[in-house]
Amino acid sequence: MGSQFVDKDYLVRCSQKTLQTNEKGFFLQFANHVAEVAGKNWIKNVFGKLKTDRERIRIIFEYKPVKDAICETLLHVQEIYRKKSAEVSQKRRLQAEELLQKKEYAKALILGSQSILRAPPTGENPKIDDGFTLALSFWTRSKILMELKKYSWALQDVQAATKEGLPDNLKAEVFSRMAVCYKGMGEHNRAKISFALAERMLEGNTTELNKMQEYKATEYKEEKEIDRRVLPNVSGSPHKEFSSATEKISLKEEKGMGRYVVAKEEINTGDTIVVEPPYAACLLPDSFSTHCHHCFERLVAPVGCPDCSNIAFCKAECRDIAVSTYHKYECHFLDLLIGSGMSILCHTALRMITQNPLKKCLEACNNQSEEEIFKLCANSNLRPPEDFFQRSIMAIFLLRSLQKGGYFEDSEANENVVPNEEELCIGELLLFYLQMLQFNAHEIYETRHETTHRFRTAKNGYIAVGVYPTVALFNHDCYPAVTR
Ligand SMILES: [Zn+2]
Ligand SMILES: [Zn+2]
Image (cartoon, rainbow, N blue to C red):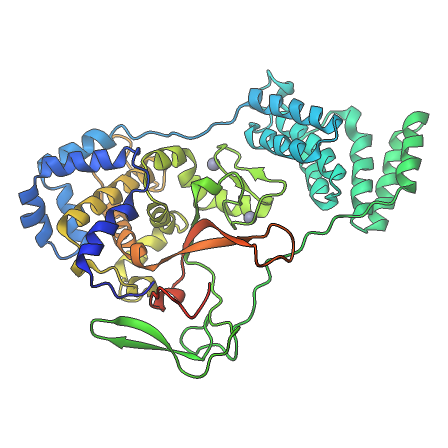
């Protein structure tokens, strides 16, 4: 979407939707209450006269009636998230095993995955499965994946189960499952070694050794999935200033139009104009159970966050990046954030903070003229005071979840809602991001095919939102000549 936005009426009507998407959420009620306390006059004549986001955030904690109304509610902000449950995990695993017996593998995979996502870390609940619920869930799912001929996924689960700790009597079967998986993946040497190890452990057990002979004689072949994630190159040479774009474009700037992209030379049908990673992107809550929280790939055999049961990852690598960066601050607050009814753009604003260390955000805040992201338009001169006020309250609500989520290391935030200097800076950034994202975020779609290679019946599924610094320079067009 472009940087131009002159229809002021439209701006007011649409703006509220970009903060709150769920009417039932508590945020709107909270914001309306604070606005009532502040009074129309104060919002219009005092708050409305302020020129910078810094002043807007600060005055909220300086004007006592507003400050008290905010603190009263935000003091009670607490963790709300979906916790692990060994009981539920065990139940799902047993259901998965039943379906496995009935050869209903697709259903079994769903329940097996749920059992993994709900399982607490190993040892946390010794009353159930002796504390090995997670290991046993991986173990069960590996068998399901083998039946589905997804041998490389199955191998990962066998390895995960072993890592979490399996009882000694399953050790021989670990090697025989690994052998079959390697064979299915075409890694015959590794398959041979694993078979040999299994056989050594089974010495004297004729029934099991016979089974092993059977496995060795059987052909296994992985059902190959198509790797859809191949990034194209931009057509022609890369642009000198915008390295993610083709040199076939150039950037113009005009009063009343802002910055916008035009074609510098002939662009042919099918040319690739920009290929760029998002500066920040967030998955829609509706897609939490079907797509990877980190890379938005569709889930096949998901792994979970070690702490919450809200989200899932396509593979361990995605999980490890997420839980060591942004997700550690968001984890315990996901249900609170979703329950507030806030829009995905608000979550993306929060992500723009949580994905970076505090130090980096503070630097960005102090060097706003240097940072590319701050050049994206926020239309602050067109925004009415009521909208600004509501957005500031959202920024402060998000700031509160950061305080409680441990983003600020030496914060007294648990006792004290009123932010210190560093926290005020982050509040200011959040307020800017909330404005900027309204005009610069893009929806992320996945193409859903009913059957393979049938493009005519393919549908676009809206799964996430992202902000792309170069793509954001393209003006919005209702009949665009480019596709995303
Ligand atoms: Zn992923
Ligand atoms: Zn989590």
